[in-house]
Length: 218
Image (cartoon, rainbow, N blue to C red; front, side, top):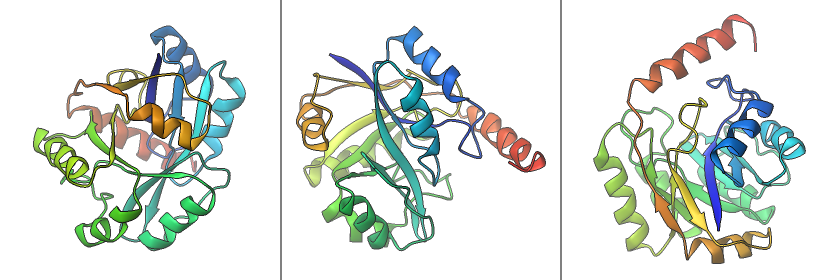
């Protein structure tokens, strides 16, 4: 079985200070052997991790469309931010990637996809994050679960790690797969979701990191 983290960040994201080499080392210590790196609006962190990791790394990107965030998995090229939700989804699909909806009902994150955009892209979605450890209110996860069940979409549990402390709190156990999006989806149908929330205070660390990056011009 693979212990799989499907939404993590590196210091290629403006709100994360975790370098790729430390992320890889922490994954090895925790037994995480499949990882999707989903930095904000870039795949450079994922590519850096892929070069270092002795385990499978899925190239991902948490893309900020003009109506909220959409995650692409199994990407080959970076997707620009600021496109419409449908344009973002089209870019992901044209690369043969998978569309995942991150934290769709978290009311405290300004980047969450807006309801009209969610309704528009849902027919093209493959995955919904039904448990995100950074969601402050449990109701956000409950609504995401109900959405995935209603539309028969695959489900993930993610740490959305921006710090090494968060890594491995949530993960998905899946069978080995062949490295393809289709193989991954088949494995995800047999997933076991492991869930554990993080304190909302973790968002303070994220905000501090964001300001620190700005001060350094990063």
